[in-house]
Image (tube, rainbow, N blue to C red):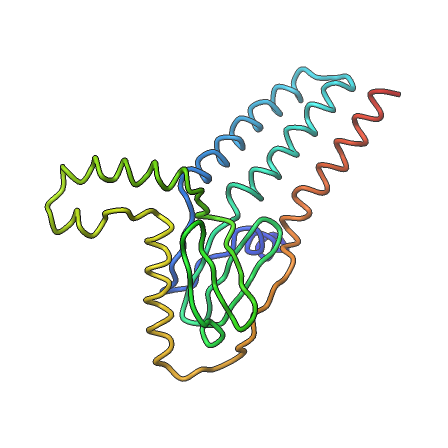
Length: 210
């Protein structure tokens, strides 16, 4: 019976009517590592019987923790109450009443008073942005003029910022209810997912060397 709350903490459901923004590539590589690690762990359990196998197993499990924290967990969630940044090991919740503006560029930023919060996902370097814009210009030739004008120079980050701004504008017309202060909390499932395997790896490595 205790599995459900833990599962909800690790993979929380998206609220009804909410929007989720996260790069598909990160999820793909995160799940790819999970499958790779599972296959290797089965082989280690089947064949391994020494200290080296134990070290290898802890490395696989640590890799799963990193894949979850860096690939599967990070996302931006926006619903009727707030916008939330689920970053590597911390969560940021900014109620719409506290949102002053949302910025894009090299990432997604939310300004609330004197504080500025940045999402881990959808970050883009100037070099990658230039490359994506060049690719978009090549693709424009295959699109109708009206569509090409809309997508010109836009990245996934830009689309996310645009939709978040639309939600913020819509929410600004509604009366503010509930808390209006940003809240930053540690994501303990993410911390445990990395800290425990890392400690197990250190113990296994020291044991193998002694």
